[in-house]
Amino acid sequence: MTAVNTGISQTFGYVVGAAGTAAARAVGRQLGIEIRIDEEKARPATEALPWLMFGISGLSWLRNLRAQTEIAGLMEARPIRSREHMVGVVGGLALTAGLVSVGRGINSIATNLSSALKPVMPAPVAAAIGAGATATGTAFVLDKVVYRRLLEWLSKTAQETNAKLLPGRVRPVEPERSGSTASFEDWSTLGAKGQAVVSDGPRAVDIEEATGKPALTPIRAYAGWREGRDLEETAAAVVAELHRTGGFDREVLLVLTTTGTGWLQEWSASSVEFLTGGNCALASMQYTYLPSGVAFIADRISPVLAARALLAAIEEELEQRPPERRPKLLVGGESLGALGGTKAFEGLEDMIGRVDGAVWSGLPRFAEFWESLVPFRRRGTPEIAPVIDDGRHVRFATRPEDLVTDVTGVPYGAWDSPRIVVAQHASDPVVWWSPDLLWRKPDWAKEKAGSDVSRSLQWQPWVTFWQVASDMPQSVSVPGGHGHRYVEDMLQYWAAVLGQDPLTDYSTIAQAIRRTIVPNFA
Image (cartoon, rainbow, N blue to C red):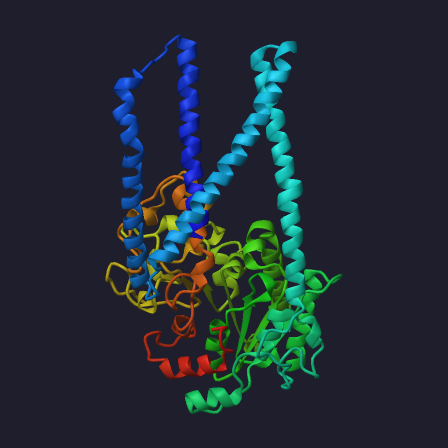
């Protein structure tokens, strides 16, 4: 990722410099201005310039390495070794050379085409046609050959991965789980991540051991993506599983929107199951087998449609039951799941009117729900921990303590039901990346308010966009509580939504959840 960010940023700098030079020459020609420099007098500067640039680059590299070490310390992660960093920089130089070579090749094609046309038409027209034809051809190749072929390969790979059983997963024997012998949904149709959802998680004995109280085995109703079955039919399959297992008779019904591949945040699901003594049912469904990163680019509508379909199907069933026999309806999702899940509602008021609580983690800042709230935060509170309507219903949190006291140190007042938590780490690039980073400095970059964000952070056009983007893949590999890793804190977030004290010591339950999570998937 260092190589990618370095290569793209250097190429941008080269393009800016080349474009500026070309523009200056064009203006000079139009004005009849020509600047000449005595080569003999300029030789000392010419010879010194490469060494000066080399020194600046070396100092920049050392400064960057120190910043990386600082960030690793803030995030309690392993520092990046200088050798690893140097390999990334060298790789970035190679990428720059390749991109510049490709750019020069494209420019050469446009120039030659323009030259071939000049004998039969005015020079400006020939130049415009040459540039336009080359740009069109390049766009066609990038779209039809590179982009589409890449998507086809990724899709094929994802489909093959979806059909493979993940390590440590077995078909559940409990009738409370989809995919069991009692289920309407066959084990083989759930997809790899769906099989993990119904295989993982606590049973009654796990909850009883951690809490010391009688417990039920939590229900997990799940339907996988199938060829020829639309989202409404998949949602109906989940509802059928809830009826079969008695999910509508449990105290809490938790509806989680998956990310790409059908993955669910196990800490979110297990937290509710332990906190309710297993008296709950989980409902979820797969809408694609594409990885989240690919779906994030190529298909952002499916998670929205899936969330709407499942929520509508469940609400229709709940309306047919008397109010006293309806379970509490909780909703949630992480990352792409949060993006789709929040868009199933028209806004905060709609969400408050339809559910009994929600936890959204890692919600991208360009999500409509985020953008409808954060710009109207209380004056003096930062983007990373905004205060909305004095925390009456919705509270943003970078850590559990933010649910009780806002970032300015002022205790919140009463927290009315339904309670909604938006968990967003200051160091989570998935939250803070957005297209407008290319040209606009966001408030979070000005405020530098995050406890695990370097104070040396500086926004630069284009560069920061790619820096944050290149952080995304590694943001799931850092310790919990940082980056895109929402783990133990989910216990406290869901406890608050359920009306419990979020600052209670939940370490015993956290240890129990860790024991139920398959190694390397925590």
